[in-house]
Every structure is written in C-alpha cells, then in structure tokens.
Image (cartoon, rainbow, N blue to C red):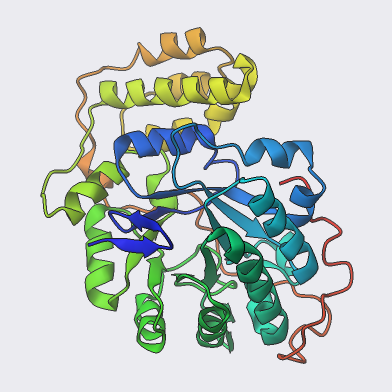
Length: 373
C-alpha cells in the first residue's frame, strides 16, 4: 500500500509527526536509516521564517539525501502564511508543506492558533487557500494536520476537512483527540473513520500507535490511507523498521538487545553533535532521550542519571559501555504509551473566540509570540 503526495510516493504510508525539540535533522536521519516513509521537521512559525530568525533558519535544515523535504508551518495570518510559502518556493526550501492545526498548548491556542483555529471557518479557509495557491507554481503539495475539535462540544474536523479539500489540500491528517484532551486518555479512532467517509482526499490517522500492529489495526478499522507516528517512536527509531515490515506483510519485528539500543543511543548523540556543530550542545540535546531509550531495561537509576547529565561523546560512550549488552528487549513494555500524557484541561482561547464561526479576521496580537521556531 502506498500514498501519493503530489509527485512523491510515500511507501509505506507512514509519516513521522513533527515534535518540538525532537524531529530535527539528526533524529529524522536516525529514523530514515531504520525504515521508509515521510519524515517531517519540527513545526516552523511563519513569521519567524519570513523574518529569517536565526534559530528558525537552523531548524529548516535537511539532510543532503533527505527527499522529499517535509516542512510543517504554523501561523494565524493568511498574509504571513503566503509570504512564508512564497519564500519556500523562491528559495527551494522544501518539497512538501504541512499546516499545523493540531497544536494544543496554551501559548498557541490563546492566540487562536493550532487546534483553536479551525473553529473560525473563514480564517481557516483563507490560510489553507493562501498556502495552496502560493505553493502551486512549484508543484509543492500542501497537507493539513488537525484534531477532532476544541472539545466535545466544539468539534471542527468535518467542516475543516471539507474546507481543506476544497482549498486543494493533498491530504488531511487527524490526531483523534480534542484539544482539551491534549495527550490524555485514548484516541477516538472512530473519528478517523468518520472523516475518511466524509472526504474524497486521503485521510491519515494519528493517535495511540505504539506498535506496528496498531498501525495495521487503525487502517483496517478506519479505512484511513496512512498513519502518522508521534510519541510511539520516542527512544524507538526502529519502530519504522517494524512498520516497513508490517506493511510488507512480514511478521519480523525489531526487538533490540540492550547493547543494540546502546549503539543506537550513541549514534543518535553523534548525529546531534554533527547537527549542532558543537559537542556539548549536541550531547546535552540528547539527554532527554535517555529515559525513552532505556524504558523497561534494568539500567540502574545512578547510571541513567549519569547519562542524562553527560556532556561529551566519550563520557556517554563510557557510561553506555557499563550496560549489559546481552539483556533482551523487555517485551512487557510493548504497546505501552510513551512520552507525555497528562490530563485533560480547558483550552485557552482568545476572548470571544467561539462567538462567530465564519469570521476571517486575524485575532488581535495573534502573532506577538510567533517567532523563534
């Protein structure tokens, strides 16, 4: 089974979700070495891109052999969105643009962005249309990532899906939770099936894919055209090898020993050092991945803590060498959630946001913090 993205074929139909501070060049390369699919960079704010913010410009780097180059944009102003996409086209910065309407963090939703924005049908339509029309001269496909809605009483996915389809989006991807759920509870896969039945363009499903079998089950239960992988690959880049095997009909699954995981950890840290260009910053960036990689393994707390405070590749290598390489993969953690979970919370919205669904006005002060990545 394959997925078409403009001139590009995504085979297997697997997409790495953008994750802040995670899906940089180094992590994407590590995942690409494990399996095939589409690997999206971290979310980029349009205003920061247009203003050529130094941090943002470093975040839109891609590997020399990374194709298609997939970039996710966030913004709330159609004019700024258009300028950003025109910049991408003029400077050949990417081959695919994904639009973020799924972020649920308060600093984004309180300005009407992310998962709050589809509630404003007029503004949402203006933004998607601006991106699609600006990308069209270069043949760059534009896709949309969104959630079910703000909360159970303010669902937006069907309206947003139809608007995106009419605007020319190549596909829509649905994280099957509301913004109020954040990452808590269980994803409602029935919403993916409902959206798929309602649209003609491809629909991708996201939420609670912890193992390759979950991806196959989601596609079978919902009829979706592909899957988006987020937290399931944290500390487990080999999940993409499992997915490639599963979609090829093979029962083979990667169950790396502790020694094999240690080798991947060192590889990840090395790639981060190469990307940062400075050893201390690269190894420091790696620290947050230690607990994810070692989840379920019998590495002691003291050793884990030392790895999570290491500053050089040699120091990290010495600590990794203390792990017993023959310890088998802890099968008992298969299928368990990874990364953040948290609890549901009220979605912070601009004053009066819910009053007029058809407004296309950009909320006042919406882009004040729209910089730096």
